[in-house]
Amino acid sequence: MDKVVKEQQVVVNEDFAHFFAKNNAERLIIDGIIADNPMRITPYLKTLILKYESIRKQFLPSPLEAITYGSTTPFEEGKKTSQVYGLERLYRDRVLLTPHFDCPAYCRFCYKKSRVMRNRKSMSYDDIDQAIGEIRKMEDVRGALITGGDPFMDTKKLFYLLDRLVALSNISEIRIGTRMLLNSPHVFTDELCDQLADYIRPDFTDPNKSKYLAINVHFNHPDELQPEVLQACHKLTSRGITLRNQTVLLKGINDNTKTMKHLFQLLLRNNIIVYYMNHCMPVAGSDHLRTSVQKGLDIYKDLCTESSCSIPHYVYAPSGGKVHVGPDSTFEYSEINGMKVIKVDMLYKAEEFRKLTKKDLPLHHGETEDGFIKGVYIDGKD
View (cartoon, rainbow, N blue to C red):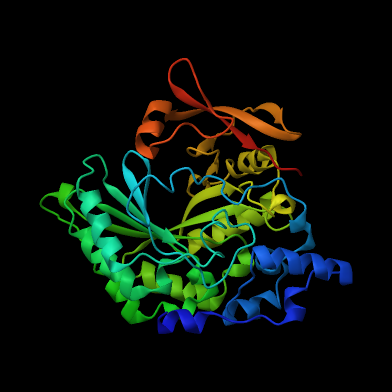
């Protein structure tokens, strides 16, 4: 474990972990919850949690997590699509790499609870070399998403991976997913940002050969956009690095038009692209944070009256791929084991899913007459 990782971890005292417990019975419930899904915050996050309920609800365990229909592995169908550890391919044109399977802070609604919070080992340098060898053979792949855990917990390994990806002739688009701009903004030093900017390599004579680096960031509430956070973001954008924000719709935190509109306006004013508004996935323990998809659509319709620059893609994600919601979307509902689900004909071909993932369609999913995936998605409650 490198120096950066050690600096980001903090052992939270018992009283802080039980912040949402109203009595001893709820304290015991939380003890059971964090035994399975541990709690972790950074020193910087602790200062924000003490001030803002919107941030507390995202990182501190609630006794309500014990009431759940969710899974620890939603949207994880692609995780075993390669023999190389840490390499996945669910879509035709891009791959996903996870060099580091841990985070400095644990979001309670994280859909990767089967990866983080479980002491999963990181990719070795040999794993990375093998992954690069595999990606080189994938002619249809042009993009790579480096995700986690959080890749910035091991910057030495991250830059090792970036050096090899940018050298591949078929890879022109590289994205890094992180939430460290919120939980550890001081990590983004001038030196680190300069090094990242070096991977933006335009070719003005032949733009087909240009190389592109962007960072997918994650902010859910205006309270998160503190001075230190925005300064860290500016260090990246001022060097030409594109930041795209992915917001998760969370009950009691940002599930209203006023909050979402304010968040997106602040992001735009600070040179951060409003990218996705994701419906909270049906991950174990997140039921109390999940609205209905219709609630998200109602908010989205309100946002559509704003400038187009502040309108994100609103999506929900059954196993097998994202589904985009438009202002004129309607939903077909059904019920599975007492759970209300949305039935949807997806944009992804069933045969291509089988080819890429080397497995059959996910549970409760089927195939339409014209060969597309017919999926189901567990809806939330308002």
